[in-house]
Image (cartoon, rainbow, N blue to C red; front, side, top):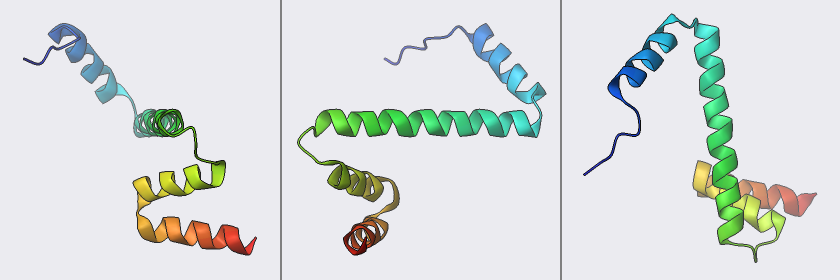
Length: 81
């Protein structure tokens, strides 16, 4: 059974406020949520794999988010630098 942490009236009010917000505000909220989600994901990866050095951790994180090709390109770019 899934528990709903918010009462229906709170959810309805939140939706109403989002609908009243203009496009710029909604975009800012979406951007903020994306940044927070990515930061939590990065922190989780670092906590789960403390043995990884920064370069390896970043390459693996890029692989998880964007795929093998971009991770390989990051590794190759770092090797040239």
